[in-house]
Amino acid sequence: MKIIINYYCGIRKENQLRQAVSKLNGMQRYYYFVLNSRENDVCPTRVVNWQEFTRKNSSSQNAGEYNVFITEKPFDDSWFSHEESQYAIISTFGWETQFAPPSLRAYLEYQIAQAAIQFELDIDELTEMRMIHRSSVGCLFDFCGKKDEIKLGMRAGVICPKCKSDLSGFGINPDAIDSIEKMLGLVRAEAIGKPFLLNEKDAFIVMRYSRNDENDNSYRYGIKPALEKLGINAIRADSVINSGQLLEKIKKGIERSRFVIVKVDSENLNVYFELGLAMGLGKDVLLVSNQDYIFQLPSDLKNWECLTYTSGDYEELSKKIERYYIDNYHYTC
Ligand SMILES: [Zn+2]
Image (tube, rainbow, N blue to C red):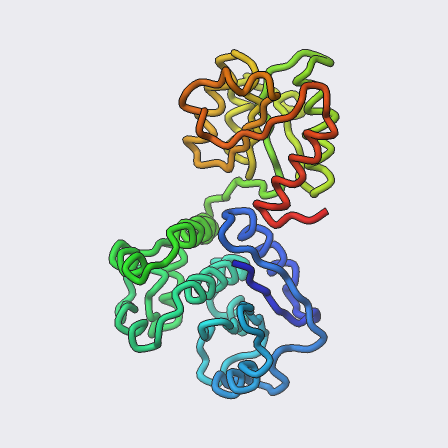
């Protein structure tokens, strides 16, 4: 689901918003957030009146399009945000002076996650009100009658079991729930001051190679240039400059990278160990193999999608890698 995040380009904390959107995109793949800077704040008046905003906005809202508006102005009802089935508005007013920490960035991430689940949910207000917790339990669906109760939800960073089962009952796509939970994990880490070490623009490459062999060349002339073209950093254990054992380096590299690419065309057991590690950590793993080897893959991997290329044809490999990330992760060249 593509969601446009509209904001006024004169917003004071634009950088925090940019970081929030980049992190949210880097955490999951169901939602794709696109920033759209506008000339003026979405609300021309001093305070935002939600009914008035709805009246104005519903006429300019295109069918099938989802919009989130970020404003620095307060709501006349002093709420944090309001949502409709296809658009939402979030106010940053007063966050830093009255509520932070957690940071404004974490607040934006939390509010955007909330809007994103509402867009997917699309139920009427009455049903929603039945679902919401009147007393806060630290769930994304807390009512938060007292405003700073929102911090409880940010620190817990969860959808509670009851709401999760409600969501499934409403037929929500499980991938959407999974993505929201990943976003909440990010908010939680920030809210409890535990740094969340995920480099959303890194891809870690698992392979065994010696200089100028097929694997080394496939990396240098196929995988790396393709990723760089998309703005993704390719990291191979040898390009990480720090001391420590190789395995430790590899483990860290896998943990902290958004993507993992595993070149499986060798019988090297370390490669399979690292592949298992990446899969166990829930990483987005792409298998790459040359065509001749694909039939020799271990049976567990036979049904896993594997990108293949003809040995020596690194241009073909490069194009396929590029296509894969464009098609699956909304990357553009
Ligand atoms: Zn709940």
